[in-house]
Image (cartoon, rainbow, N blue to C red):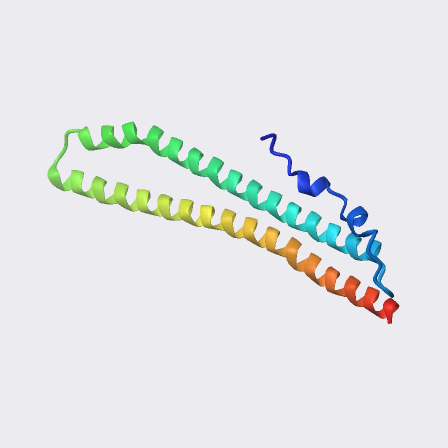
Length: 141
């Protein structure tokens, strides 16, 4: 499969041109629907880009954690008094927790942004579509 969606290239105006509905401009109605499909396609693209950004950032964070592991191991393997090791361990655990919390927040914000962007495209198009259909209905009446 090439990744192309053949139904998006299909011209519904031609298919419905044989039908005649008194007072309705089928070409205008199909133009409204075409805009709807374009908006859903745009929203889908935004969602895909959001997932890709999330995956890239998650991979960067994982790579950084792997790179930090030898440093942490070196810290634990240094000689010292048990109390000193406990203090270092507690401080390292705190820093790791804070870093992971910040990373989780950042990833959550990426997901929220992608969802919001896609939702805004759909919301805007739905509003426009209702206005366009009301205008067509007014002209038909």
